Length: 199
Image (cartoon, rainbow, N blue to C red):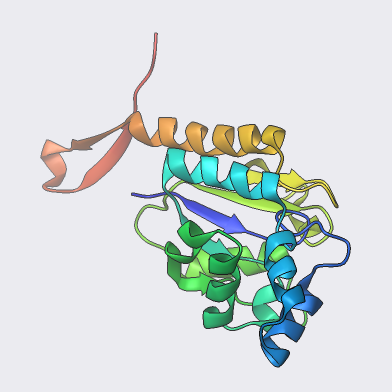
């Protein structure tokens, strides 16, 4: 089962002080201009994009957008943003439920919890939440904190944060790999998981 990345934009990919969601919204309203090409070049940080690409190459995840950008842009527009900024691999691997639900009283924690509840399967895939402590503050000290990589404001998804994201996914992948499914002879076809004990 392919892992998931719950992906925020601001302070993860978008760290530019002037090229931001408001400029993106304006570009969709007024069409392409010379400044628009600069927008797509600068709105997402080059290093952050490269690091996200490295994570994708290693784990081939699907993506769920947690960013507030999804409150202002529809799926087609989000797809265009990703494509124009060189993140086609995110666009092409968005989940069918491509964004977390949001309302006026929700937090990043409750939004991700709601997505997990509504899209639950018998066995969740491994997942990592890439966020920041401003918009993702509710994740701090929550049950999801250990699966969250908090990027620094105006810095983004650095190489150090890439290592953290790898560690989050590797720990879950290792745990899942070391589960042995055993059929209880006295319980028919009922299955249960037995953790392999090392050593």
